[in-house]
Length: 534
Image (tube, rainbow, N blue to C red):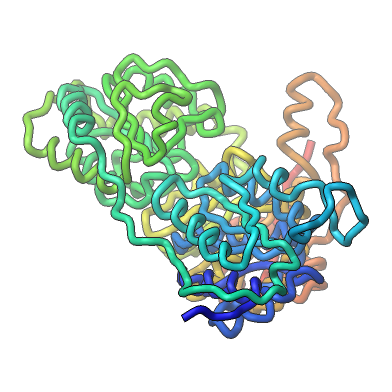
């Protein structure tokens, strides 16, 4: 039987049909009909202080739950405020659904001065999302939402925008039963591709594994393959911790290391799983490999991007690796030419020696953080020196934990709101935000959001008085640093003004004590660590 409902209710009903229970956003004049129905469909709402914060929070929620994060904005500037988060989600393959009103169905092409009017929201979002869909009827809303969830479940997950004309949100139309995404089995690989890959690995004397974020659903198979092959494992930032970073075969996040890159070129087979092998992973153009490259990825486009695959295995990583492992275990393999465990130990030392002077300021503090946190803690990261130089290579994680880092797009201000999203998703799990003072101030207002939610949320900030990376790059170019120094801010006092707690830690022991207390204190606790600046 058909039901007569508004477009706003149809949209919320479609979310409920896809098991959405949490959204992030800010109400506005044009989206009130969406908000009117949230509680009736059992959907909770978090109110950030800025739509960019809503996007990052939904991103953090998605990464720890493996379910799409949902953002609701109003028209015009609100939607554009969320665009940076959409771009980051696209770069990191995060399932993000952004919902907004749009101009009325028959709105003139020529500007009329309607509130929040802009030339085209869909064209703007198409530049950063997988697609932007403007519906033209209430009945179409179900199909649009189902289309988004189909993408999330069957292809490389990426952000999607759905626009509902504001007059359709209020319009009442008859609709049929709610539509939802059909069940789809994980994509299985071509049997011949699996055979070729197993033969290459079977002949290899010096294999290596490179794991990206797309391998996260295949953690057990990744470790089993590494052990079966005696293959050292190196990961991207998004692959951090898939194989325990304390494991004797793990090189951790080391793709950027010249020593590790040189070693990788000497391998007689490289198996790369769920990674772009991009410049943002390597911090340099991809090196030329001497041995064949096997790529396992859900996205067939990756097979000829960056470093083209010699053997392309397209499909769900878990299904592909189980098939590959089964074939390898059933066939004889070449003996290793060297001692992989000794090789990994030597490579770790070489990697750390390359940057020992630069990284020394962060390592004692990172050890203190590691000593306090549980194995399954979530650490959210900013595009800050203390994170990509410090925590990525020097803060070991295992599969139980998660490290959420904004790679590729490299946005600033990610850590704090992403931590809020992760903590909302899993309130009983330890969550810590880590970053620098420059990045924090892009979204510092979200301290108020965490305070209002009374989330125990430590926010560890290395304060070097500005944009340290750009300052260092200017100095390296022989230039005088310009526009990189920020006026001092009493960050702990700012946290208290937002309703949280704030303190300073002038040594690793002080950080460990402050972090321990913060994990049991309702609301955010900002822990500032002063750093010397040139």
